[in-house]
Image 1 (tube, rainbow, N blue to C red):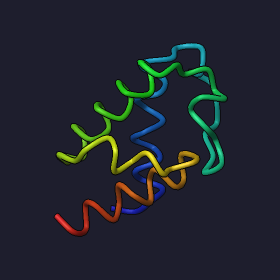
Image 2: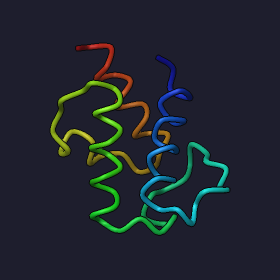
Image 3: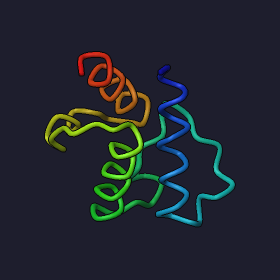
Length: 82
């Protein structure tokens, strides 16, 4: 699965959790916090994304991601190593 495909999945979940972003065009540089997702929203988005990807990893493993692009990169690495 490509990084862009993972970003598309993340974007779907962001739109489900933060409906005001329905029309937002997501980019690699977007930051969930700056888009208005609070800590509970961010956790929910991450859990939904991991479920969609059938990944079981610690949220701590994702903490270093500074934006959606980096998050997708980490998730892609985890997918490839599982």
